[in-house]
Image (cartoon, rainbow, N blue to C red; front, side, top):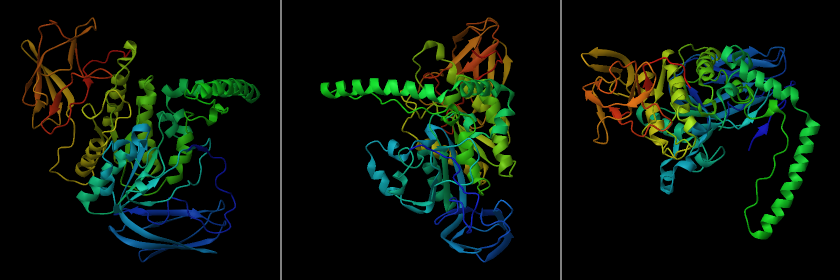
Length: 510
C-alpha cells in the first residue's frame, strides 16, 4: 500500500531515537567503519556502545548525531546500547555482508510470485543468519529522516510478508548464494517500486545536473503549473458517479466490476515525479554501511534511452558519492526479452539494453544478461533464481575475490577483417563460444551504408565469430540480438552465459 509522507519526523526529538534502519536483528557491514546515527535534543550528549567499542558525541543544533565505529569482523549476535536522557537497547545484531537491492518491478517482485506450484520451496527458506529489511513504498517532495521498516530474520513466513508478494526474489537468491559461499551473516535491504523511472531514484540536484533530463523536468513543471485541484475534484466526482452506475449494472448482470476511479493526486505527488522515491527510500538509509548495490530497472525509461544513459551514469556516481565510496560495487541486470505488440516498438528494448550496458564503462560495475531466463510473454517473469545467482557469482568474483568463477557474459570487443570475412572478438570468452540448441548461430544482422539490416550466417571459431560477406559486399555494421525479443539469439560463452546484445555502428537510434 502506497503512503505519501509529509513531515514524518518531528523537529523536536526530546528523547534519543534511532532511525528504523537500526533495529533488532539488523546486519552491519563487516571489515568497514560502521556509521551509526540518530536523533536527540540539540547539544545532548549521546553514548553508543557496540561489541566492546564505545563512542560519544553531541547532537547538533538540528538534533542529529552520528558516530563511527572501527571495522569489525563477522560475528554476533551483539547488542547496541544508546544512552542520552533515556537508554535504547538494540539486540540480536550480526556483523556480515550488507547489500542494497533497488530498481523497479523485476527487483520488487516477491518470492510469492516466483514459486509457481512449488510451495514446498518455502521450507528451504529458513535462514536465521540472513536478515531482510524491506523499505516501504512511499514518496515525498523533500528528503525524509526515517522510514517505517524493521529488520526481520529470513524465514518461510517473513519472506512472504509485506512488499509485492514478499521480499525480492532476485535479492533472496543473491543472498542465499552469499550465505552459502561466504559462511557469514547476510543483510539485504530492498528499496524498489514497480513502474518507476530512474529519475525518481535520483536527488533533485542530480536530475537537474543531467542536460538530457531537462525535457522530463519541463514536462512535469507544466503539469504542476496546469493542475487545478478544484477542476480535478469535479472530474473525479463526475467519473465516480458514472462508475457507480456501471458498477451497479455489472453487479446485476453478474459481470466483473470496472475499476473505481482514483482520487485526484497533485502531479508532484505522483509515482513518477522526479526524486520522490530517493527522498523517502534512499536518503533515509544513507550512509548505512554496505558492501554494494544491486540494480534492476529501466523499462519505464524505454522511450528515452539517450536521457536514461546519462541519468544511469549520474545515479551510480551520485550514490557512490553519497555513501562516500567512489568504487562501491554496482551490479545491474540488463532488460530481458519481451514480445512487442507494435511493430514500431521493436527497437525500444534493444536501445535500452545498449544504454544499460554503457554503465560498464564505469569502474567496478558488472551486468547480468537475461536473454535466456525470461518468458517473453511476461514482463514480470517468474524465473528469478538464475538472475540472483548470476549477480551473486559476479559479487563472489569481483568483490570477494573467488578466482575460480567465470561469471560474466561475453561482451563485444572489436572487429577485424580477414579476406572476405569479418571476425568479431569478445571479452570474457577466453574459454570459447557455443550455441546451446545445436543449431547454427542466429541473431546476427549486417548492413551496408544504406543502414538496411539483413540476417546473416555466422560461424563460431573458438572465442570469435566469423561472418562472410555474401549478402553485402561492403558491410558497414553488424548487430546481434537487436530486438525487443531476440528469439534467434543463441550464442553463449562456454561458461553457459548468453552473449550480450550489441551493435558495431553509432547510427542515430530510432
